[in-house]
Every structure is written in C-alpha cells, then in structure tokens.
Image (cartoon, rainbow, N blue to C red):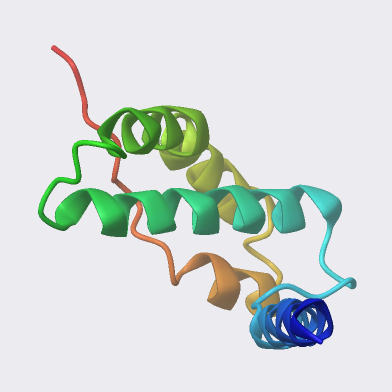
Length: 104
C-alpha cells in the first residue's frame, strides 16, 4: 500500500510539473533545451541563496557550474535568433540576462 501511494504521489508531481512548465512541444528544441537547463540553474541558484547546508554545498556548487555556465551567452543568442517570434521572446524574457560571475 505504501508503494502504491508513493507511485501515485510521484506521478502527480511529474504531471503537475509537466503541465505548469513554460515549454511547449511546438517550441524549437534549442529553446526547450535552454529552458530545461536554465530552470535547473535557477533551482540551484535559489538553493545557494539559502543558509548553507554543509552536506549539499559541493552538490550545489557543481549544479551551478553544470547548469548555469554559458547560459548568459546562450540566452542572448536565442533572443537574437528568435527576435521575430514574440511567443518565444516572452518565454526567454522571464530569465535574467546576466547571472554568471565574470572573472577579470
């Protein structure tokens, strides 16, 4: 019975995430891919802003590196490429344009 409840809960979570996402299967694959990557980046950014959890600090640092690196440039490229597509620009505009740390 416990396993059945877990399965239904997991299924419900997956379905709710799928239905509330900003992506559409009509979006170009590169836009879908960017949205998935940047949403993962945003989750790690939000977690990094909270008081540090020593057990997760390495995982958070790796997540920031893996999912956030290169997204500033990629966002700019996509906005330029799809400038004539208001539907896609609206989706891209919900992301901050400069989140990466710049090293001098």
